[in-house]
Amino acid sequence: MRQLALLVSLSLVSGCSPKVRRFPDDQGAGSGGSGSGGGSGSQTSSHTGGSVTSGSVTSGSGGGACVDPATQCPPPQSACTEAVCVDGACAERPRPARTPCGEDGGAECDGSGSCVACDGRVDCGMCAEPGCPHTCGSAPVTDTPPSCADRGPGADDSCGDGDDESCCGSTMVSCGTYLRSYDGESSTDDAFPAAVSDFRLDRYEITVGRFRAFVNAGQGVLASPPPIGVGRHPHVDGSGWVAGWNRQLTPDTAALRSALKCNGDNLWTWTDEPGANEELPINCITWFEAFAFCAWDGGRLPSEAEWNYAAAGGDEHRTFPWGDDIDASRAAFNCTGDGSAAGSCALSDILPVGSKPSGNGRWGHADLAGNLWEWMMDWWSDELFTPCIDCVERADGERDAPRVTRGGSYRAPAADVRAANRDYSGPTDRVNNIGARCARDL
Image 1 (cartoon, rainbow, N blue to C red):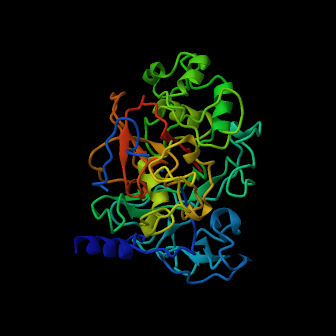
Image 2: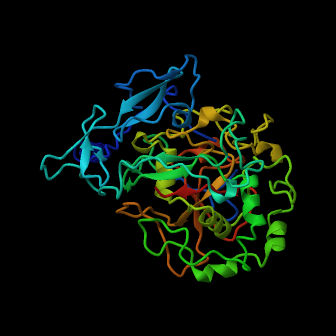
Image 3: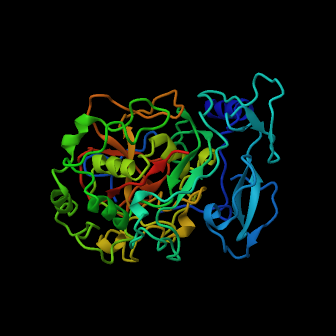
C-alpha cells in the first residue's frame, strides 16, 4: 500500500508521473553482460508500458522494422511528445499530463502533446517529492566529440547492428521522476524516488577506437592530467576532476598502453595498433581513466540516478532496458555473446557495440544490459540516499572509496543485468568486465 500511495501521489501531484507500467516490446527498443560488477565489489541487488494514445504513423513498415525510435524516427514535434515504435512503424505519443515543459520548466504538458502556460496556478509545473528536475523541455544537441574527430574505425559511422550508425551518437534523455532501483518485480523497494533533468547519454559504450584517440592524444596519464574541475555534473558543485586524483593515473602513455592489457587472461579489448577490435567496448580501464576520457571528450560520467533512469525507461520501471524478458537476442550475458554454451567465456563473448538493437532502451541506448559493466560518477553507498534531485553520491576526501558500476557484463547471469541491479568496484580496479559510456550536458 505504501508503494501504491507513493505512486498515486506522485502521479497526481508531480509533473513527472512515475507510474509502474509494463512496456510492450513493439514500443521502443533498448540494450545489452560478467559476474559481479567488477573486480572487488560483491554483487548486490537489495536496493535495488504505456500505450500510444496519439500520433499517426510517420515512417517505417510493419514487422518490427524500426527498433530504435531515437534514431530511426523523426524527432518529436514538441517537448510534450516522444517518438515511439509501434508495429514496426514510427509514431508519437504525448508525455504525461502535468510534465513540466518550457525553457525553465514553468509550463506543463496537457496530456495531448501541447505545452501550456500555467495561468497563475501555484502548483503548475511543480513536482511532488523529491522535487522538480532542474531542466525540462531542452532541445536536442548534435556535435562531434574529440574522440571521433579523425573518424577512424570505431569512431566513425561503423557501429550498430547495420554497421552504419555513428559510434559517437548521443541521445537526449527527457526529464522525469522515477523510483531508483525499482522494477516492481525483482526489486520492490520503492523508498528512493529521484528527479532527473534533461541530459544526453551516449548511445554506445566507449569503443576501443574512441579510446585510442584519447591515448594517442597523450591524455589520461600523470604527464597530462585533466584540468581541475572538468567533467563536473552541471547540478552538483565540486563534482569535477580533483588534483589529488592525478596520482591515480599511470605515469605516461607507454605505461597506460601496457596497463590496458589487464589480468593476464587475454580478455582485454585494447590492441597497440588498430585492428579488428576497434568497435568493441574498451575494458580494463579504471574509474579515473573513464572520468578523464569523458571529460576530455566534452562530457562526463553519468550519475547513477541518470543511468538507472535511462536503463529503466524512466517512469516505466522496466525490468530490463527493453521490457520484461531476456534472451540472447537482446543482450550479451552469461558468456553467450558468441553463441557458445553459457559459462564458457572468451573474448568473442564481448560484442561490437550495438550488436543487439532489439535490446535498446526507451531512448535508443544500446548495451545498457550486458557487454560491460559501466562506471558511474557516484561513490558506493549500501543504501541510496534521499532526496535525490539530479543527485550524485560523493564522499569528499575518500579518494579510494568504491565507485558504483551498473548494467552487468558479458559474464553476468541474467539477474545481474537487470536495470535495477547495482554493484561497485574499487576506482583503481582494472578488470576485463568494466567499461564506461559518457553523459553530456545540454
